[in-house]
Image (tube, rainbow, N blue to C red; front, top):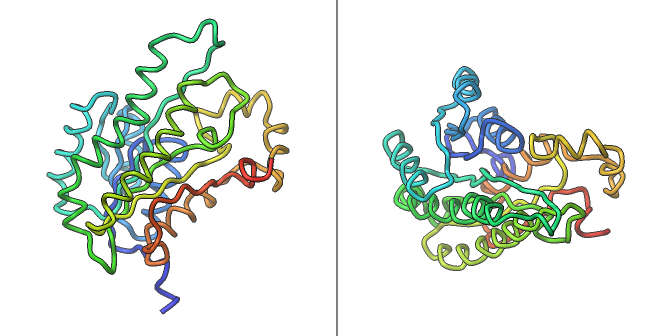
Length: 252
């Protein structure tokens, strides 16, 4: 029945980088709609706030494979099955090409590309325990429109990492579909976040005007897309990269 298409009550989700920005929007949006939400983040004060709001919160810095596997073990100790994994934690780096350091590649690609793969790999038993043909387990990667179009900023490792996330999404989807796991990516445009704060403070009106819709993203925009992917409505979609950007990457 259509009334049940977007019902996500009772699902269990893990959202990495869930203490701020888009990760926090998604985590609280899922919880408000009846999901049991686990988040991972680095700052204990933000994790305490999340626990006070009813989320399960683990401290984790996912910059190494070992840390990703440690988080997976903590999640496995909390839940026997996982319906949704949102790989959101990420980093950026900007510098002129003449000054762009080697460390900007190691840090950004390790967290943005390797960590989502390792965490998905490590949590496969919990995802498979949830997965059925009628209601697949869901993996959602958080990419970026900077992995679709060329950004104006000199964030070379970031844009390359997000293009890699989009291809990793398609690659995983092709291999995990037969195991009843869908893998899709959301590619956000400009949203209020710590990563975007500097640019919005300096050029907020210009950035909003770059969208045909004349504004930056709001929490409901990314929550709605996530709920669609997590619910029955999105159960037949896999390998997709969905730009949630007001048309910036598709019309400009």
